[in-house]
Length: 210
Image 1 (tube, rainbow, N blue to C red):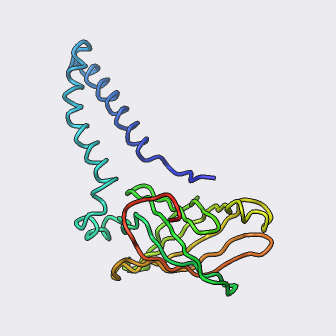
Image 2: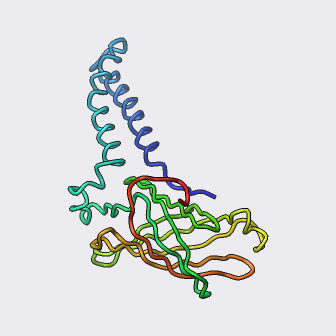
């Protein structure tokens, strides 16, 4: 399964094209421009649209997590910067030995996706959200995910894929940043749950456990 959300980028593109069409029709109907010179008029109109499009791309991919925009995020509901690789431990509630655990967060202003890796399997988020407390001072990363066991582990469980939910609270003031929380799964025949403690490593995405 995969996330099914509004494609903001496509919507912006469609709105931009429709605005050009409407603008063209208005100019022709009001005799403000001749049809044969319409291309030249729209070219000048494009000089306005192009910088706005470039600015939106920069904002969505880069500017939103700069100190300037993060300092005013309350007024704009800009999410905290979680992107990058986080490493730490996962501790199962059954009392087994803690294991190394990694998550990698791919994030823009309008997109958030989490991939996790451990010695026994990996998972990909399906639904991912950032929640805040009433004062918007503390944040939680919550995501529903689909997991898959490594080949050597599949015979120990009924089925290959399973699902789970993870809630990680962000501690921004620690250096490096920390994500700490809990998880639970629908793994069969025995459901698992436990705690997770991670620290931020870098913005580099490795797409693997080690």
